[in-house]
Image 1 (tube, rainbow, N blue to C red):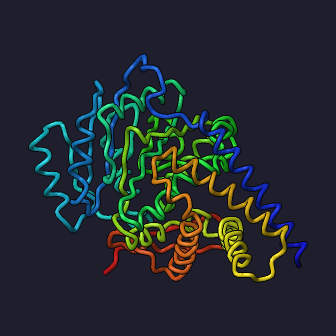
Image 2 (tube, helix red, strand yellow):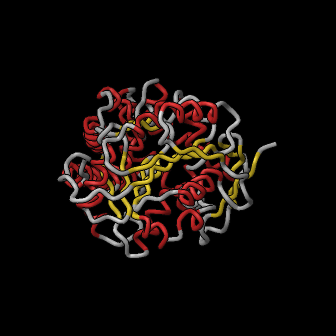
Image 3 (cartoon, helix red, strand yellow):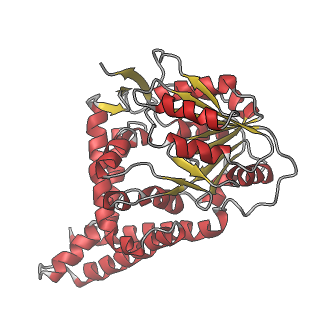
Length: 397
């Protein structure tokens, strides 16, 4: 048993060294908005914003979008059957800026997820050559659109997604939100992902998705993902599978997003889609989280046992120290790049533990059919593992 554990520790170190290689390579490959030359042309862009119960966020977001320093764009917002004062706020915003276009969303039909249905309606009234989908909890620098189009044109992209600066203010947010940036920066070799057509090396961030309209139509648009919780992930895969050009950039200097305001909101928010990230596949989901526990939590536990005098071999202690050291460097790279407090680096075992708990909650809530989001119930059809994910969304009574 001792030899088996030693072998697992060695494999863990090799795994971490691979992640370190990816993170270091991304310092060059994962380019930032603002690093690209000015575009030679400025195609018309339709900025499309779905909003459901967003009275807290909508005004600041829309004002930041209307303030874009770009010669040819439109902003269209759809109120997706909000039950708060979202529509009232939008009405006031149209008085401030006559160019803002607002729409009342049509009732949600069967077989559609609510946000996807809202986005589908937005496309129907958009006139742009490029389509930009963003979220109400984002805030945009006035040069965001200009720099995004510069990147889009320079990369000759069909679909450009951008990672905003994910804000974390409360302790609960600081212990959870940075994992999104960590996952992208440490697990996705961006340079290789751009070159390969393998859809496994692809992701998208729903907070900023810029499509060439022809590419959007070619892959079937939101009609093709109407039952997929993770529309952004599926869009990335579909773009690649159709032989189109996908790119991802770091937009932390131009876009900010505060997804949630406390630990309760974080847990509820990620519970709705964490299990779906792995295709609702138990045979993948459980091993992945067990492995992450082995990599980031068990070495700390081994060192704790050694400190308390429990019999742990010297070899195991040394390997655990190497593992912890590699983990600190890896997490430190993310926290430095994305401007999170460095003390969080030392709390990485706590961060991973919290995500393991959220992963378990997501799995249980999804299988039990109790996942809800903004007053609607996500009824996820858990199919055999070899089949793809299916989702419906229905109103709660």
